[in-house]
Image 1: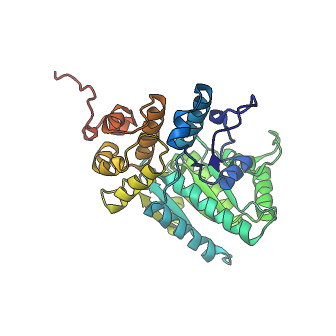
Image 2 (image 1 turned 90 degrees about the vertical axis):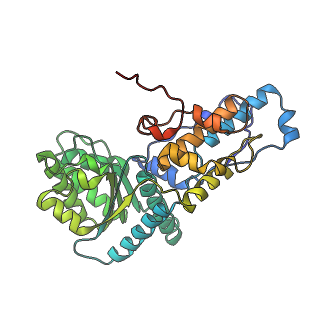
Image 3 (image 1 turned 60 degrees about the vertical axis):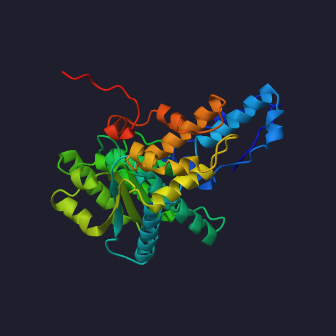
Length: 351
């Protein structure tokens, strides 16, 4: 997707107003798959300086929209999850018994959902290439329902498949059967279940939800990939049900990125995507150590910090990111409340 200055002749051209359905709906998921990473053609210095104020405002809004969704960087973890996911789908394609799955586990803001969705996107694009023009739904992406029940889980699948509204008289078995039939006919072969830590097998509700999820895995010719926060400590592997899940799934951990060459390359790559008119080359690359200290190596925190600083640089007309700009940006409470940020945040008085 190329983002440029839109035609201002119409009333509906609002670059900041683009809205899409969530990825847990079929329309939202397909939009996610179809949308290429945004690119932006920056005007040269003379064109930029000669712009009228109304046109400058439109141009800046387009740049803000661009910086709000900087390209996904394929870290080694994202690549590993994509590789393992593809390997599992290939291993499972002729499997008639229990299929192997994968669990992606780690702390918050370590890129679990990003990696999960990128795995699904790559798989769907490959299937489309192999079977052009088909009506397949190769990937289904859902989130585990809060305070889940078997019916709620079945409804999550029904929602993304676009099944008609289901009345209360349809019991859980009816909904589940309809979902399985549609997924089989649609040749769904990859199922992504996010927020799996919400399913605690130590509770009765969690046990029932687990049994129902197990039913789906046994009745669908698909590879199941789960993602959640610190899954090993959430009760997901508790008891017989948990042991069965653990015995059928490989585990891939995500975590803070260490301060290595990959981190520095990641920062440099993100810096190269900036579209600011006065930003000095390699400023962020030279601040890689500070950025690691400030974010604790969390990819989500780094992305937020750089995107927010970029938008700030447009709004305040500085058109550059500096150390001062970065220090002025608030990030997540976990990192802000630690002492590693190096900012001048107020400290609690002694006594």
